Amino acid sequence: MLNGCGILILSLLTAVIPATAQLDSSSAVLLRSRQRTTNTDNLNSSRYKVRSPESRRDDDDLEETLGTVIPTPVPNRSIRKGTNSITPSMKKDLSNATPPAEAEDLPPDTPAAADNTLQETPLTNQTQTSDVSNKTVEPNPPNPSVPEQVRELILGGSTEDIEEYRKQIHPQDPRSNMLDIAIAPAYYYNDSSSKYSFRRYHSHAPGLGLGMNLWFTPFFGMQSKFFTSFSASQNNGGVNSVPTELQEFEAGLRFRKHFGFSRKAPTLNWGVDYNDNLNKISKLSTTSLGHKTSGLSFVLEATIPNSTAYANTFALEVRPRMKHSEQNTGIEARSGSKNETNSMSFSLGGQWNLDRRNQLFWRTRYTIERNLFDNQADTTDPISNQKPEGVSVTNSLLIFYFGFRWGS
Image (cartoon, rainbow, N blue to C red):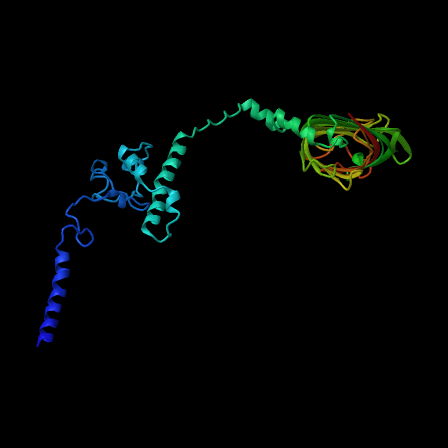
């Protein structure tokens, strides 16, 4: 009985002692203090900061509750409109924002890391906008005057361009010469065929060719050529021979196109010449009429080097609507009242470049001229005993040159 009562007393004492300790006001371990002041140092971490009430932005800018500051990725309205100003509230937000160095330690998928990535966007856009607005635009250079444009078109460019091109050409390239003078012994063969006997004859003899090229720039210059025959004669009535002289002169402008600075680079020349050729027959002739033809000639020439020592040359000359007249000899006759005359020449040759100043060259030139007369001839043909109508004449000239060219 006593044992049962003793056990019951011990159990009650055991339950009362912890309850008493729990009511002890001196214990700071189990009871929370009644002070409601929050220690802000415990919340000041690298991730969150507490914003003071006076640092809050206007509700028009961004609606957010007082607490953690999260910088907005959207720029202020003044920046969106293109201005470079920053409001005081934005300066406070940027100063309270987490530095990029501290955000690098956060995982990329955390909200703070995403916010720090977004906050760089307005700063970048602001810098680009400022750079564009502060960039000065240089005015366009004034256009050259009309005389300057014409001069550059004729000479091939401005003075600076011409001097630069002259420096680029090889010192031993003949294109560096400003003046070229050529002399070439020649031999020619001339044949005139027609149903009117006074315009039917042929001749051949040696001759001499002279030439000169003057280049004001590498792209523009002048040229002239002259040819004359020596000791030429032709038949007179099939028994005797009479002296004759063949001459040709041409001069004009040249424009040159270069296809490179190398000595192996080809060149192309084109221009307009005045051409004049004369077949002067002695007054002793009673069976032939002389002639003279003159007019404009449109020229296209090409030089294609095979190596630095040798180059092929080509030329084409077209002469539409030439002026043609017949020259009296021992007889006075006309093939018609008026005529239509056209002419064309083709040249083929080559040149050996000894150096820049000296070259040897050869050239074969073939010229064909066509005369078509209107109405009836005024003199009876002694062979056909008729006055032909619509006389046509075909005059061909073949000249072979071999000469020397000196340049400076």
